[in-house]
Image (cartoon, rainbow, N blue to C red):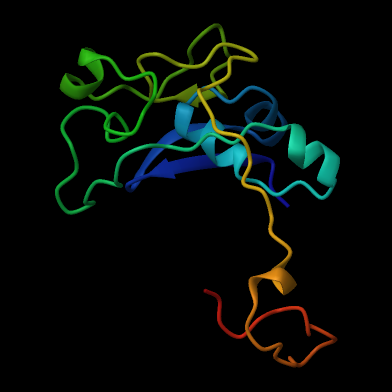
Length: 146
């Protein structure tokens, strides 16, 4: 589909790289958090992975925070992040094609604090009447949940 990917947060590019490079070596904490939200089709693999859950509220794009726009939610944020906007440039020895706007980019295979994936509840056990839906048998999906 694409050879290069740009990741944006509050209207600014925070990371841009070749597709394979971005997915294998994300440098911006927001990119890493987004990747942890990608669904995995293998239930066993999904149970083993750690999801990065960002704290705080998304700041207003009309009145973004000073410095790095991601700093209020970033688990790696330090004082410098709140004071100075990071430049979109190669970091940690990356090529010019992989640029990140972060004062404290992620090293290869560095993990962010995360939370275990939410356990999926059998929707039939939630109660409520089953509702037929177009496109197949969806009788286990309740109309309303407690």
